[in-house]
Image (tube, rainbow, N blue to C red; front, side, top):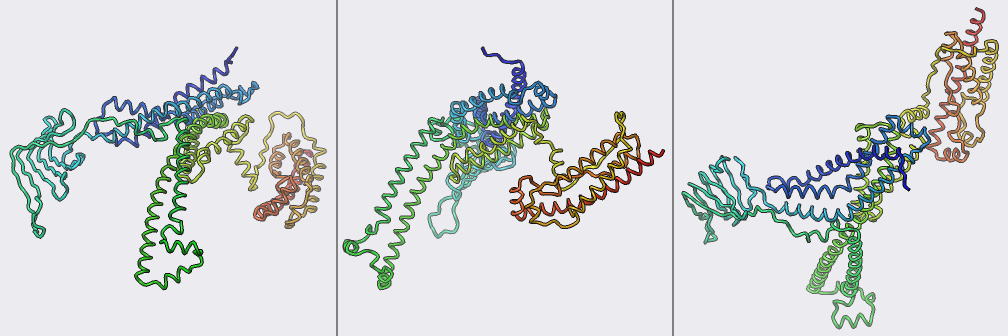
Length: 633
């Protein structure tokens, strides 16, 4: 019997509540981005609420798969960031529960979300895309509502330009109306000027009924004489004039069959069938074009006369010097030959251009079908990858709420979007192999998720800024300074009788080490990389110094504590080769730019180590004097 632990229920409950909120937020953001692209197709067209509701519904369904990865990433970051901030993650790990066990119920849940995402893309998505794009095409074809503004020309009615100086919105009357009718062309335009008028829509919403009062009409007439300079025109004055303008403002849904050939309106089975059929079609058409070319355009005897054909059959074409035959021809023959060659080349070029266009169109449709097929898998798998990025990253950052997690998730999603969109365009345009372009984002982000999961499971400080700052200081040679303070409780007092002897011995060892290693001299470049021995002597001197400092730090003497701060913090390995492996050091020396960098670094650290030896000797003398003074008191 399946038993769910209370901890798993707590983790699932914490994640699911956040996931629902982040999903609707992400879906709303993607919908606003989508609507912003097509807002011009909806504004000012008087669309009914049912049409707008269908548009919002189908757009929301089509954007669900794109919203799920970002929602999972953000929810995982916030959930595990809250766990870390409230020390709940620390309590779980202290109880012996690893991060992977904590993530186990969520991994099962995210796998279910991946299946839901795939179902939306493969079953619901194609139907929603078909309905959505059919609705968009219908919206584009619908004419806008006639709302003539004041003081500007209105050109939304095909073939007409209307100008109204003043409009009474209560009665619908238009005053000082000027109409340009270009239905017969710009040269035969009709101009109507009226004191007032009214514009109404017919009951069938197919025509506009125009009432004009007290005006004049001007119209150019066609000239009977081509040499006549003045073009005659007709002028007509009227007290009342009526006109019907053809204007279809009704919303008519286009046929859904227009989307049958589009890749985004097909499931994986239909996509695979389309890919197979287009591949076979391209191969068969390509072979047919090849046979036609070899038997026609590139056939030597294709356009030769019967006598020339007999000559070519009896002798090879290479036996004839074509240039010499052309040179001895008459001018008329040369012109005929050149014109014939040009016409044949142009005919062949236009023929191949048309054939290449038809092949390229099929190839473009084929690549779009292949990218859609792969996208259904990569977008579903992105949900799981983003969870393995967000969950460990939240455990490492340990910041909950909507501050840092939102910033980090947006940055990660931008990187994913750039990589995924670049790969998609490269695959769609035929510059990359389709599977390579579509799986590039997965190949890059999946190792990142595995790396972050591994580091977070081992409590690594991969995102700890102090660790990187300390490493940078270590590389460039910046070291910390000692700060010795008086202890409140002292268990063992220093052995003041023994300490002076140990300090004199330490000074003697430091002086002997500096002379033996010749720290002031320039090191030999080749001997530096080929020497296999390790400098254990410096490690021993540093351990002895730190032990004496630790013992003397138990003193109650303030001058002695102040003197202990003068001892340097020694980097015991900075003045020797950078690596422990002999062959790696040898390779570093062979690669000259890298080896030169480490060579000058080692040289600088040797000089600093020599100064540290002198500083230790001087500080030892100062400490001995303080101890002797305190003992005499």
